[in-house]
Length: 169
Length: 173
Image (cartoon, rainbow over all chains, first blue to last red):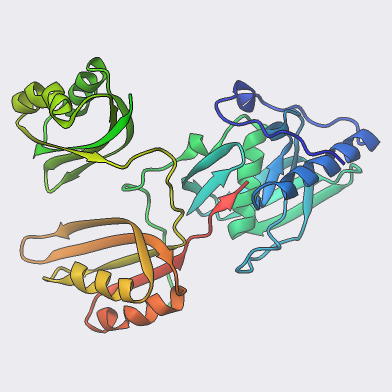
């Protein structure tokens, strides 16, 4: 298996929009294995997207099952041609990126999402996700549209306060 | 280009201060590192990390005219500086309630004793003249865990302030 070089900002290629995967073949599966190897070789990333290694196809890997403090999750996920079809709520969280070394910042993301995708064999997948896993998927999917978390930073001082859940009396 | 300096400017707020100060530094051959500007109670404050080849006096003289014309007090210190010294916080503490004297001292002392290294502190006063509301947000690294911070702020909560403590889980993707 190979470990790819990670593109880092301000590499212009990170702004490229990736193409949908059309062929679910062995070369796709080989690429995904190398992409996962690259993620594991890095500094504890919970996800990686194909464009981060210079492959402009709509493939992301997300795995938040190994967090120090456990979070709701669906385990190790390879998502091909993922699409978010529903968003709900919003939350502030701190993000960093393999493609933006030594910097983290606050980003607002949807708290819950409904996701449709394919697995590496082309079989359809659907997920309802929340919290940290939903954030990770949104972060990785942004790469497919040429966006980095830098594009979504909110001010340190003026960021939104988390909306409380109103309890029913 | 060798040394790093901390330039601090304080004064009444008005439009265009940052552009004028940054231009004076750039034209004088200085480079900026990290900077933090805030308006505190209607006053303008800024701290700039500046990389500059000359002395404190030479750097001061670059800004003397601008500072005087803008009505700002200028202070320059030589510092041990550099880029890339970020500490990622793992907890956010929010304290809010009716304003009263000593709240910052009480909260930060309790947190320090419970193992918090503060990386960022912001506070605001709102509400009315007669009933001021105080809001403080602190980010930091909890060396002894979050529960220790919770216990340490229990007394602040009992005295009528609301306290939220939540972990910051930094996503790397």
